[in-house]
Image (tube, rainbow, N blue to C red; front, side, top):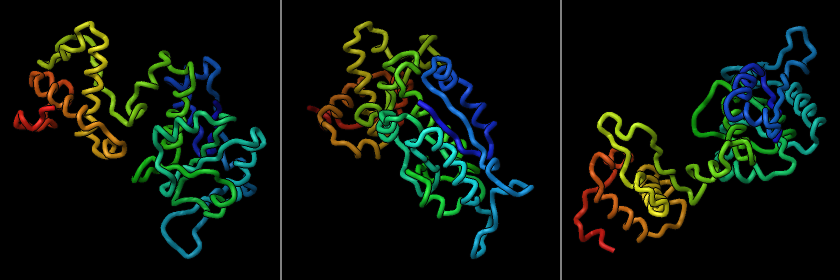
Length: 270
């Protein structure tokens, strides 16, 4: 998978892409990237990439021509590259969207990082394939958003992660459920224990109870995710009945203590 970043700050891209999972992916020759600065395609002595907006307004607007030439340069490298512009009006990025694009052939993405008060809309209309938004908030530039998109795509390439199952067990990967919390040594941390079911050695039972915790955490912590899928209410009620038998300290370790209702027992019989 290859990423081509169009950015005024290539040093920001390099610092991230050479580290962690993305760096390991490149060492394995599974990922690659390069950056193009729109200033390279300017003709004036100041290498201007922005100007005042027509009609007035705050801030400056990125010029269409340098961006257009930068994208054209990327398309010379790979004519079928998918040009993605990170913007507030874009489609909300999600795990499902990442997984769909990770299957794309060729796996070549041009991620354009805006700056200032925005870009000339005519460039979007003529040169952008998709617009993507990370959420309803504003960043100073598109670099952080572009790197988030690249990271979520790159880790889906087989072999990039050390354990092939890792990306399949993440939150959102299956049925839009939050992942069960993870624990490691020590067995007790500041009076909070590792839940006993994780120590049983019965892997079938552990997986069943991890799923129960995923159901509960999704229902209480992310009701929007819960409502996005059809759910088996009986399975949820069984998970809730089991969770209410756990010690308070284990519920707190699982992040459920404050979320669980204190029901009448007969209300949750199945």
